[in-house]
Amino acid sequence: MNTGHSSLAVGIISMVFALMLAIVPLPQILTGMRPDWVMLALVFWCLAMPSRFGLVWAFGLGLLLDTLSGALLGQHALALLLVTYLTLKFRLRLRVFPLAQLMIAVLVLLVIYQFTLFWIDGVAARSVPIRERWLPVITGTLAWPLVYWLGQRALRETDQQPARL
Amino acid sequence: MTRHRQSAGPTRGLALGPKFFLLGLVAVTLMVIDHRQQHLATIRDTLSVVLFPVQALVNLPFAAWHWGRDVTAARLALLEEVRELREARLDVSVQLQRLASLEAENARLRAMMGSSRQAADRVLVAEILAVDLDPYRHRFTVNKGNRHEVHVGQALLDADGVLGQIVRVQPFTAEAILISDADHALPVIVNRNGLRTIAMGTGDTDRLSLPFLPNSADIEEGDLLVSSGLGGAFPSGYPVARVTRVERRPGAAFAEVSAEPAAALQRAREVLLVWSSRDPSEGDDTTPADGDDTALADAAAQEQP
Image 1 (cartoon, rainbow over the protein chains, first blue to last red):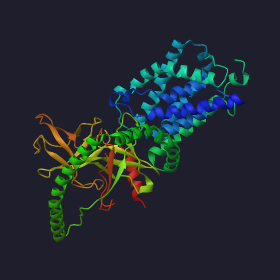
Image 2 (cartoon, rainbow over the protein chains, first blue to last red):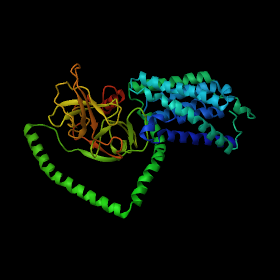
Image 3 (spheres, rainbow over the protein chains, first blue to last red):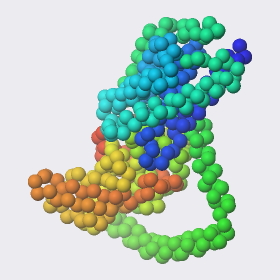
Image 4 (cartoon, each protein chain N blue to C red):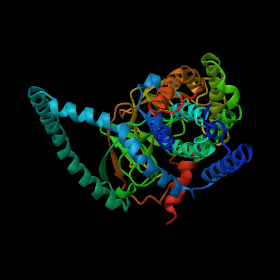
């Protein structure tokens, strides 16, 4: 039970960290390329500990992201819900993927995530440049190995059965 | 795989599908309500209070760096800076002497004309938190909020000119929109001849566009644009931008005019919040561009009480 608690704590800490990364100021050139850290972290934890992290987390984190970014309340929540749902739904299949294949899956999830955000922006008649919209998809995919590695390490630190994703 | 409870998947409570559907429905409802009207301010306020530590934490290293730089600055550099500031102050105070008499004269003339406009504005210095918001929109957060009587629609200035306005107020922080945001528009006049027009943001921090000037308009490169005060949100007479390019196109209805913002939109760290002495409910329909419904609705909600 203890290990369960500490792994939950690690999960929460990583989420706070992801939220911080989501608002850390970047140089002007890089602002469009910020990976969606919160989404990546959530996908990782959903794969590693699906009994603890799931849709409710996606919803809550989404609302926090909405508040942080000044978006419509519910915009990121819906996008994260969608991604989490797909992750959980195909979890057993994703678990056996090697890293390279997992990266492709993450790429698809990121496309869905960004498209949902983009689509809601469109429906709400907010003007957004389209060109830079797809940069986070690429950087996010490239950031996945890092998230994966950090997550695995965190799990090992807490004496958790290293999740073989 | 040894832990069965873990690999059993998310089975607490509802099944995955219905749970997703339910939460998705809640999210969509929230979005609709948030988009149509402003009943969700309390939720946002609560969440923002929860998030304030996160923002403060992110801001901390930057604040520490600035502080450290101030503390460790060499004595000579400080002396030099003090000397420069003294000179600058002398310069400014000389100009101020003239301004005082001009202001008095202006007030007298206006009183004679029966005009109600006053010139004095109250200001408060706020600091921009070093946090990035949506990269596609030019927004930022300042460290003053409800508790400092900040209100929606309030103008923000820096030492060189108009920076933006407040669009959302939370207990400890407030969110502001830059004049360069693609959804922002600002009524201005050309300082040289009083020509009225509107400066729209372009989504590019060093360019504003003035799309509503006919080819025959009397505007030249280098003209200073100042806020006109029409619309009521921005105090009048503060520099906004300098015209950088005028292209008259014989075939088109309007000239293509762009201007460079006077304020340091990228670099400002401290900003001035301005309370216009003018009653904000007098005239208000032009402030944020029609694109930004939330800002408009915010402003409307603000004026109800």
